[in-house]
Length: 639
Image (tube, rainbow, N blue to C red; front, top):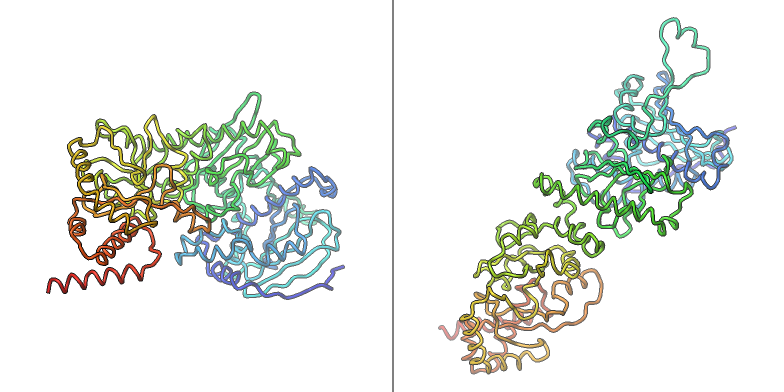
């Protein structure tokens, strides 16, 4: 008996309608992808049942043979993908199918570029692959029942993808989900058995779960079998790809498996497949994506490595199998030694997991090192997508800090490009004779770093400076203080000590000038009062009249700006104003008798120094007013 007592028609959310509209207008460039998405969803449902049944085998309801079945009805023009996995309750259908990955839908919309080929690559990543069905179907019906619930708790969802859907309570004897596609008139080739078998072989051959279709008989045998119950046969290989010998797996199979586990539409950039034997036996198949996932910087973003134990799926996005700075890695780890009822709590305190994690980390770093050495252009592609994440590594992974540092790339003052391609090893090879430090500057933009007045003396002497403008660079430099025995030194902190690179005569001349112009420095300090920690003669400046620096152990101005931008409090640190005593403006300032005009000049110098390093003024209007007044006075004096 069908239960229609609880039936309702509901409208899709506005952003869901946008996604549907895009999908129905053939956002997928390859229409047959819909079957891969549905089979993948069915596989996930079976794996979730297998995991939940570890603690409650009653969920199997007497049927332990998990499978996916695909059938067609040419007369009704329907294609059905069925599984006997975990199934969905009415509430789960409302939350997941009715709202399409509610956590990611809005972000999906925000990430659309308008380029159909590019946008099509986003769908699987945002959990909206189910709706690819509407490319080939003008109506989709989903009938499901969650394992463990009675037959009367079945649910039927149906929609034509045009703004609304119906939801009804129905009776469903078997657990699991049936997705019924009412195929469009011009897509009838998807009702052909040979076409479906070809697609399954292409996209789902690697699934450990059997994908079945009705057996086909021909001629006399078909006549004999027509009144017998329908028989099914497995049409995929049905063995876990990661357990097969590497020599038996083609590049295309690796790529297809990656697309399955990642929901990506592009092949991976690289992969590593290893079987480890001994006291801790496991297999790892890990992939580096070509493009960064949409949620790479999401605080709640999960890792992309699945955990299996003896081919039984245990956990999706197991965050203990990979360090956080390698969170973009996708793949599977299958252990022979962990207990089948492993939980997150056990994972957090398991030495075998720690061993797997350490080995996976070293394997991935080795893969990146080989790529960086042998294929620098390809490594450049990786760096452009994931470099900022890798910069988190030295702070998080002390044992591998040196190896990670060797993989980092930066823009430098020796090139005109802001592209980050220079390594620390390359920097060390180019160091000047007598140079014992790796110099760097942090700023909030590439332009601010490249044009900072702090670089002037370094340019004059031909000394290379690393230009850092990523937010994470402040975090990096606070933990990576040296590399291969060379100290990393900010050019905007403390007294500038260039060691043997310093010109002794030039230094002596500046010290003499500082002594001779002590009265000017004191006068400037008096004007600025509590605004600065000190005023001193600069050894950094060549062309600019002034710059701001902080103490050797103080927080940099850029880090303070970063913290404020993310809503955190930054300790108040008074800067030191350094004055270029040879600059014409400063010389003019020294002869200024009018105290009011002198004060205006000094405050303008302070504000200019703050602007030059990318800072924001506390009172922009006051700065403009003082500047206008000085310009007007100069024009009147000139007139």
